[in-house]
Length: 47
Figure 1 (cartoon, rainbow, N blue to C red):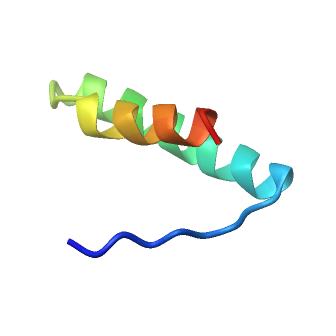
Figure 2 (cartoon, rainbow, N blue to C red):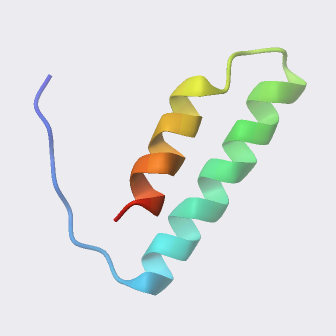
């Protein structure tokens, strides 16, 4: 799989983080594993 790096500002980071948290919550409600989304959240937090 090819990795893509994108530069984002703080506002964009906030929007993406909010969307990922909503996706994670939806995964949990549907009894689906949230780990893939958790990994993305952690990567975004470390940037």
